[in-house]
Image 1 (spheres, helix red, strand yellow):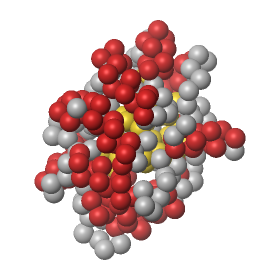
Image 2: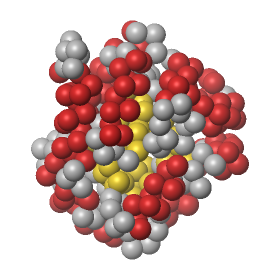
Image 3: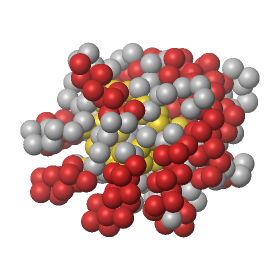
Length: 263
């Protein structure tokens, strides 16, 4: 078992839910990203979802798209993100999953990517635009390396398809709470809870809910039915808000702590 598996095992034993925080690597710069990860761990975050900036992040809304562009303009690349994780591993063992896109991995090479990611201390891969039916090369290599592969289930996913996705997933399953792109919303659709309860009757792996969750109240309500909650855009907005503040890390960490405490 890797760090992600061990974290969920520990949380289950404690009857707790996971809080997963997304940030875009390199926004506003890699040094700040490094410091944010360490601060988030102290703030109660269980798993870090580290976004690899990409020029066409099709699953992301305006907030994360803009953070990707800012990171790319700073020269952030996959290689630099892997180096960041390697550096973090000298100071923390918090589970880290990279959120990236198929083109980046295809260009890098599936097997080489898995090998290098594992060597640097990455625990999982989240690829929103890679269907499970096209992921055999990646999942085979990842399984050998004990690297989790996280796939997505949406509100529109059929039970048959959900079972197929669950079989291909390891670490956890990413449940998309809305039909659309990432972005903070003020309420979680009621249908999310209904569909989530249904798929939880035949899926035994951890299911974590993301997309649109931005408030402590939402974190609390979703935690009642899910194994974990993922917050991204709301955190990225806070980073942008304090981008010129020397206390950026502490202020964003305080916000994250308020969300993590709600689960």
